[in-house]
Amino acid sequence: MNRLFEATCEELNERFKRAKLPLSYHNGFIQIVSDPMTEEKISKPFWELIANSKWKNVEIDMMEAIDRRESAQRDPAFYAAKALESVIKIISKDKGWTRGNERGASQFIDNLQSVKSGAFITDWEADCLRLIFGKVRNELGHGPGGEPMPELTLEQTDWVIEAAMSWTKSLIERM
Image (cartoon, rainbow, N blue to C red; front, top):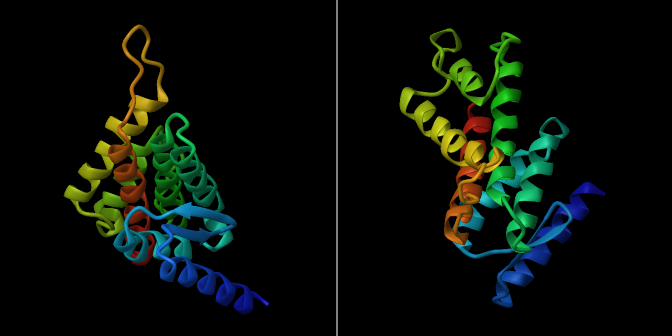
């Protein structure tokens, strides 16, 4: 039954593609495809990799990010970063690197970067990940006080969602 459903979904996506409709079906949602190469190299492998129930929270937050982007709601990039943070936490825990006293994404990134973990990620990768959380997730996740409300452009939002998917793909494939 699962194989039949997967084949039907692949057929639907192929029909969208042949009809030159910028749409793709994933996990119960028809989504806008802005770039066919991104769809083929990042989005499709991402959804396939997180199909396991272990990644359910990743799926929930990424679907929220995409839904918010496509319906022009606030902070879709925040949800994409949450999805990525869940990936990092799950990997850290699964590999036995979580100590239990981590207070944020940066310390879970430390777990992946640590020599004890065999340097699962390199220094430059850890720096890039920290920037996503420090400059995107934190900015959107904390109230700005009297400062202007932080907002990303559509292009910046797309980049964060695609980057979170790409990082997820890269990290899960290493497990």
